[in-house]
Image (cartoon, rainbow, N blue to C red; front, top):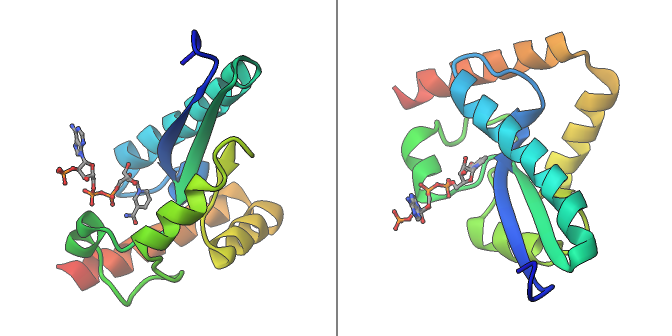
Length: 136
Ligand SMILES: NC(=O)c1ccc[n+]([C@@H]2O[C@H](COP(=O)([O-])OP(=O)(O)OC[C@H]3O[C@@H](n4cnc5c(N)ncnc54)[C@H](OP(=O)(O)O)[C@@H]3O)[C@@H](O)[C@H]2O)c1
């Protein structure tokens, strides 16, 4: 891609990437890694004509999600995967990081702006407990 000065890469991160997430520690850590890597690649490769987009997904009704989660017990709306993919592809080349879904974007902005990291960790912990209970 560098040689052709053309191309695109999409990294899949998550809304849990922005703080530690109890019971999801390793998962959230890999998503934090993807987010920082994606931001770095965006900056490095943009001048070379390669687009890099990191998606920070909220709940999305993919096969894995349907299997693992307590559908109906989520704090935020569960997005349709096809809709999410279409919306996200349009952002490739336009920005470094994208959170699909207006409600997810608004909640992310609100939590980052007005809630401490500690309060966000607690919120995720509570939500994880509810979902684990619903899926067991
Ligand atoms: N769903 C959510 O709510 C959610 C929220 C936040 C972040 N994410 C992130 O979004 C990403 C996708 O999650 P998902 O929910 O779509 O999971 P999924 O339903 O399990 O889909 C994973 C996809 O990856 C493919 N895959 C798995 N291992 C592969 C490999 N070694 N080589 C090539 N393809 C491989 C699978 O292909 P096959 O079907 O052929 O096995 C499948 O199409 C993950 O990184 C996840 O952390 C998802």
